[in-house]
Image (cartoon, rainbow, N blue to C red; front, side, top):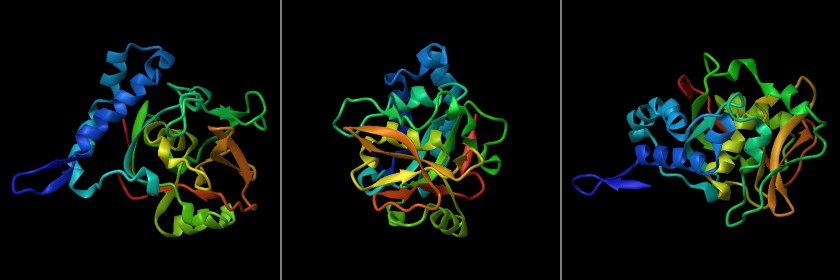
Amino acid sequence: MVQVQAGGTAEFDAGGEFDRQVARLLEAGYPAVAGVPEEEFAARVAPLRQVVVDRAAELSAPEPENGRVPFLLVVSRALVPVEEAVARTTLAGKSKPGIVDRHYKPGELERFTTLEELRPAGEPAAHLLFGVERGEEFCGAVPADAMAEIAGRGRTTLTMEEGLALVTQYPAALAKNKCFSLGATRCGDRRVPALWISEGAPKLGWCWEGNPHTWLGMASADGGVGARVGV
């Protein structure tokens, strides 16, 4: 989404993209799951719109097929539980809802939480995440090594909520042989959550941090100050 300024210069319409992401969450039924009217839901995230507008000059248009998007509006699991968010994902051009892998035992998802250092201040209801990449360059790499490389670049891995936001807003970002792990959500053991494709739908599963897969990369985002802005 771009807008053309005077003189013919094209600039990414960050405000318009923010509005589209809010509309997508409304369409997916996020307010009903959160137990609030649509108007209240939209009002709660509205302050974040100015953040992306102020940063528009440094943002580029989304390229979901290439696994890169400028920012994501991410809703906290306190408002929309992970299981509900998974069920509101689909693949591009498909309607079959996402599922949680059976290897997560009943109630176990609650044990997988965001790493302390990556939690936006104040435990916000929603936050923005900038400079997102699905990380297919790490397909075939040992997840632990991929996470170390990402950290060395000054970037951060994605949480479950952030990975689900990516697929919710950009279904084309999850593609055959271009699936991704979510290393910023852990439960204290060697399991690393991941999103992949199963039977024509997204699936939230996990893999061991020492086991590489040719079809599974490591998603990451800008790790700088202000990379996660909440409200």
